[in-house]
Image (cartoon, protein in one colour):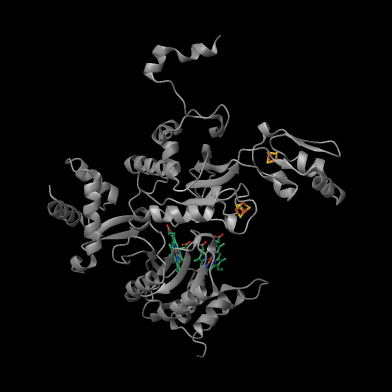
Length: 402
Length: 74
Ligand code: HEM
Ligand code: HEM
Ligand code: SF4
Ligand code: SF4
């Protein structure tokens, strides 16, 4: 196919050192009229400094409330190829593992039913298939489903849960992130496909505090693998690191936020009761230091990443939860949170915002959790415990006044 | 109220408020809770209406329940 539009502004974006999406769209445009018109409209958008997309609209797959993000062009006459340009989110395999055969299947499918443009992976984790027409949505969902795939989450629903590669490829993983993600996806099918919340809810699971999925900043509910045993030390290997030029005092001891490591030039010692489980020493001296069981997870709540104020990190609500299938304790806790949020949440209010509005104390009561020191975010500043009327009768503080 | 009656009532609620107020699923559940209908029953009825295409989920910033395309009379 000959070039359909001149795109001088987009061409500029190909000149830098990095791979360019413009180059990729041009490749797709060579065989796909939707991709070709996408280039045309994008060039015009950049020239006019106006987006010509209408937002949203009524489009979806029967029985589902999420998975498709409707998109229509305002310039359908000029760019008929993008008159409809809906995005389809496909639930990714946990840990993002594919065979090449699977990738080929998805790509062929998208050449046939869509623009050929994809985004692996979207911020939610999903495979994101960009640009198709309304009439193709039902057949697409059916074909995906027959081949073992399902649509992902969008809208005011539980979003597609995601995780790090975990035990499949990483020595540090202390929980089975893949199994947890798969299990929660199956358990909460209704909440994934039938939007019933005040707003979106994201669950991200990582195997250790290195947090390769940035769950602490990107998930309403972060599940982060951790350990309870002492850190095992192989002194010979520590000395090896020192010999090879690692400045143990500077790079390990001084950086320990728990101030619990000492080094006498020959032996490393860790006071485990002060360890904050940040993983710094363990990752810096890989192989020399190792976390030991019992293994489990820290559960945190309330992160979000709004544009204006920037990322809000999530807050510890369970310092240690053993996570063994079928993860009943976790599932019950999640359901309790949702009930409370559904009851009191305003439209487009994330659960973290509701906690700020109604208080951590109420949230902890809803979850059936006792306050513990690990929950404190700002010492002397987190007022999530107040005495109740009936406590005042009992004068519980007297036991502290001996 | 039996299930079919409940489905009719839910449909009417959405139909009568079309163009005036947008309902989220939780709003519908709360509405019928005030009439003594258990949440689970309302939820199940909504699910049937959605599966049949009488009602659909729409998305505009948040997700709402609105009349299905075929009943909208476009
Ligand atoms: C100059 C042009 C563009 C710039 C500078 C740009 C930059 C970005 C950045 C910084 C992100 C966030 C990545 C992250 O999650 O950290 C993003 C996300 C995204 N971009 Fe672009 N982008 C451009 C054009 C486009 C175009 C033309 C498309 C589609 C045809 C596109 C599709 C997407 C999608 C789908 C996402 C979401 C990815 C996600 O879900 O994480 N972008 N873009
Ligand atoms: C005025 C134009 C647009 C607006 C206001 C807009 C806004 C948004 C918003 C708010 C979301 C997040 C939805 C959610 O999950 O809550 C989103 C997601 C997305 N948009 Fe857009 N968008 C626009 C244009 C486009 C265009 C032109 C494309 C593709 C060519 C596109 C592709 C996507 C994709 C792929 C996602 C999902 C990314 C993911 O799942 O991580 N958007 N957009
Ligand atoms: S978060 Fe931890 S367990 Fe998961 S991939 Fe990263 S380092 Fe490995
Ligand atoms: S994990 Fe972090 S807090 Fe614990 S000993 Fe190592 S550096 Fe210190």
